[in-house]
Length: 275
Image (cartoon, rainbow, N blue to C red):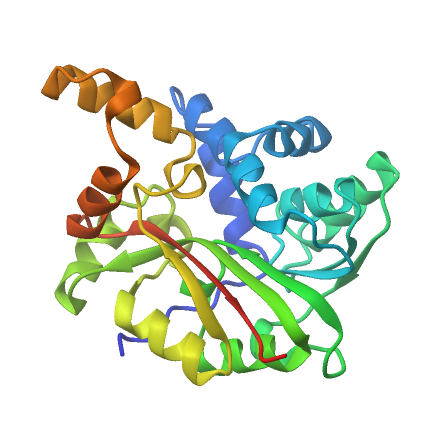
């Protein structure tokens, strides 16, 4: 297992995001990360994004109580609530810019009922079998104890409940972690980024009591590719192979994604608890 990620303080992450907002030429990255204001407009843009549309397909036909794990400034909580879920947002950071304070403001301005708890995922403040869905966007790689976090997720899920962890940073070797951290635009500001080996995620999720049903590699879904899309990737491959994008098969993208060794590449994990 890799070294534990550093815990962020209540102001460090906010300071890093505010710093990024103020950097010349970074407006596109800020918007792609949904760090821009007004927050309600950013949340609505996320709701309409190819990323959330792909998540919604996974959730199709499901409903009930949802926990948004490590909810940040609340864009996923907003999307879940817009789609009819009864949402609880877990976010330890109290920040009015990137944390629980921001979620509260978003909930109020959008007229959506989002219940907020300020706690870490390794100690979820909910009874057993509380949720039909636990969703986390870019959350697992921040875990101090990944297996304990996954065990807590399994505990609060109802029998047969759904687990989705999207856009998780993966490295191929422990030696690749410094390269990824050096490339991350905000790690130098707050020291809170991390990445695990793929096998670390798989082991922790399964050992925690979650049955994995799907693992999406970097090129298999708009979830991991955002702000790019699968269609964008096929168009780029078309220029290199002279094949029409429409006939480039999805299994080719899956194969290319599985071969990628880029430090910090994104994976999505989907699972469920026992019935």
